[in-house]
Image 1 (cartoon, rainbow, N blue to C red):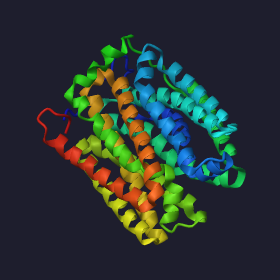
Image 2 (image 1 turned 90 degrees about the vertical axis):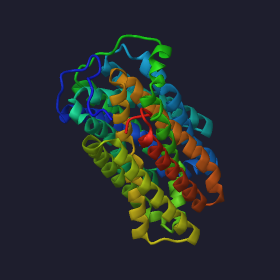
Image 3 (image 1 turned 135 degrees about the vertical axis):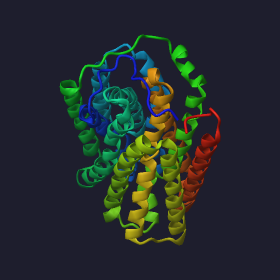
Image 4 (image 1 turned 30 degrees about the horizontal axis):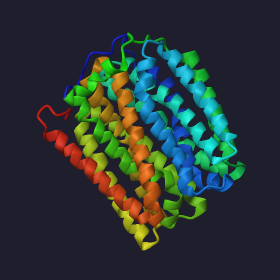
Length: 400
C-alpha cells in the first residue's frame, strides 16, 4: 500500500487538523438527519398511519437517492468553489427537513427524505475531500475520521437526543430541530471555512474512468458489503432492541451506547489506518461486527438479554460499523489522489447503497423476528471479512 500521495489539484498549503474541524459541524447535521428517523420510526408510522416496514423505507429512499446522486453531484459541482457547494448543500438539507417535519402523509415524507439526500450527497463527499486537502498527507486518514466524526457524533448525540425530543414533544419537533441544526451549520461553514477552489470541468464519463483502476474497483464493493451488514437492523433498532429485552425507557441509552461506539471506532480507525495501514483495521472491524451480531442473534432467539451485556454489544456494533470507513477512504485517496473528491463521492455512494440494501433487506427479515435479522447481519459481516482477506492476497488487486 502506498502510504502517502500528492495532494489533490487545487489544494491549499497543508494545515493542521484544526482547520478541518468546522467541516465536522456540517457532517454532524447530515448525520443527525440521516439516522435520526431510526430513533422514532414507530412514532412516525403511527402518526402517518403506515407500517414500520413502509416507514422504514424513508431510510431506504434517503440512502438510495444519496447513492445515485453523489458521483453525479461531485462532477456537476467540481468547478465550483468548495464553500459554495457546502453552503448550498446545507441550505437544501435545512429546507428538506422542514418539509419532513410538516409532512401530512407518508408520500410527502418519502419525497422530502429524497430531497434531504440531495443536500447530504452534495455535502459529505465534498467536505471529506476538502478535509484531506487541508492537511499534510501523514494526517490524511485522521482528517477523514475528523470530518466523518461529525456523522458518528450525530449517532452518539443527535439520534438519542432526537429520540428524547420526539418522546416529549413529537417527531415533527425533532425533525424541525434537524432543520435548525442544518441552518446553524450552514452559517458556521459560510463564516469560517477557508477558501478552496474547485477543479477543471470534465464529463462524468471521463472522470469515472478511475473505476478502471484495480486499486479503486476492488475497494468499493467492500464498502457496500460492510455497510449492508451493519444496517440490516439499524433502521429498525427500536423493535430489535425490544426483542433483546430492553425496556422502552432505556432505548435512548442503548442508542447512546451505539453512538459512543461509533465515535470511538471512527477515531481509532483513523489513527490505526495512518499508523498500520487499512487492512488490519478492516479485519478488526469485521471480526468485532460478526461477533457482536452473532451474540445478539443468540440473545434475541432466547427472548431476553441483560441490559449491561446488550449495551456492551451495541457499543461494539457502533465501533465496528464506523471503524470501516476511514481505512476505505485512505485506500481510495492513495489510489487516486488527483480524483479525491470523486473517489470519496463514489465511496459515499457505496456507503449509502449498502445502507439502502441493508434497510430493504431488514424490512423483510425483521417481520420474521429480530434474531434472523441479527444472524443475517453477522453472516454478511463474515462475507466482508472474507473480501478483505481476498484483497490482501491480490497482486495488484487493491491496496493492502
